[in-house]
Image (cartoon, rainbow, N blue to C red; front, side, top):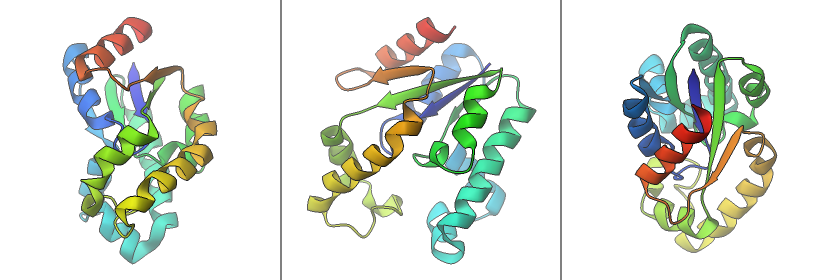
Length: 172
């Protein structure tokens, strides 16, 4: 089984994914890290030099390749990954994929992301005060895709171990 974690940037996909993979005795892969390795450059640099459309294309291709070539994996997607091309439709219809939406409140996302702006190309140039509104707008746009996940977990006030246990209990 391939467990695909999705949700907005900063919601905990990579952190939860690493622990979940250990618990499931499988490999963990962060899609952004995978793309950076394959492209031999950072996501920020890809955005800056080749643009978001190029990035979204290689991102979608990478998801499909990983799902076709893996039997067991925990995969953390980028926040926008499910929203482009036919990626979410592909994931939902894939017989070996279980999708999990880690849903975190706008306030908690904002609190986390303000401290990580430099590593996040979509918000790197925003003022701190503008981040909550930016997140709210994005979540509104992306909720259609995120809410197609097989499992939706409201992660506010839950520890990583609690989130991981919920995923294991509900999907395994």
